[in-house]
Image (cartoon, rainbow, N blue to C red; front, side, top):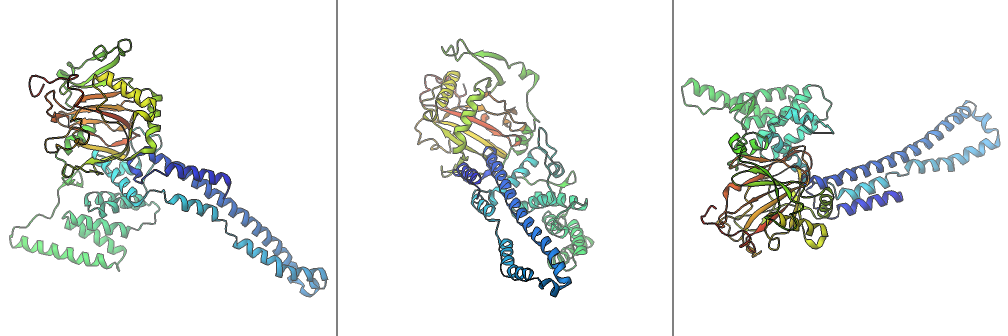
Length: 537
């Protein structure tokens, strides 16, 4: 292997060493895969050059021997009458052809295969591919994108447009099918079939697509369409045993349905609910799903003219904090009740890059606390990677912490470490509370600092599309702006939780979202934010 290739390879290994797969949960870590793939392409080109060099030598030998044998074969005895020709014939067959054999058998794949084998252990896994497919489906649902739009890559704010092939769409459909998600199976198998019918080159057959599509349609109770699709499959492959069996079963069900209708029996409807030419999306576990997703799209925001008049901009000096008197922060009201404010120019570009640099090697799949067991675990409704930074890690962390303390007037001594998060493909955190509720009293017991009284959220990147912070209870949507931060209290002054602050991080449609946050706790802030006179002050 070339020395430069070994150096690049070792660099890639170091980059990947602390990565725990799940690349799809962090765009920041997925960028490492770009460099790994570029290295593999360089390695492949080295292999191609070596093969071309070998073939060039073989071709040159073949051309030389073609000329020589044409001459010798035309008059063998006359040719061999010359003793030098006789000697060279013996030598060629004994030595030269053996050298050619060795050249032909020479393995030029060693360098490339060695590189590929080592790097493969750091490649995305089956879990990553499944997670990435589900992320596209999540974006499809949240932002009401049809498969055609996603397949053609028609997304807002994109610099590098890309499209999905028949095979890609088929893979999406298979992922959904294996997960028992027949809604998305139908959508993506239909898209695969559409592109196939348009003549796109692919190794996936229509029979394979129709096999999955017909069964998924049947799962929706659409017997007539399932039968029609199965007949189309059989017209392409009359020997398909499963399709033949399914068709007989579907026709039997249809016949029974017709008989029941003729006898005026009450028949359960077999036609599924269809909206806009597609089957209705099944309900799931999240009660405010429709409100949450509408806010992510910028719909249903309850910012009325009357409320708008109550929102102001001002300079904020942290209640005359000496550090902010000369250089106060620009403060803007985002919402009136509960009061949510945005601060501008909280972190510089240099500070942001340093924080990202410190966090990136430590990023791990973000977890949530199981309300029943109290144990931290990963969940499909939180797709990101996060890390925790201490003040000892770098002076910039201590500097940012002090700044948040000066702005809020709360102490960081009892606050949690600075959490840095990077969202992956369709990265999101569905509606949740930052504070612990009465049914989970031990959530922060080990910290010994009480409940989370407030949240300070730094936006460390702009996001081209999606990625808003939304509050479904009162219909607010706050969009990321690099260098700004938003702040709100999770608890009333009485210590009771403000349930209106249930919020969510919307899926990132286009872009790479980086945030950092500080959770302030009750202890140490008793006199900095004293109790009010009522429970909801």
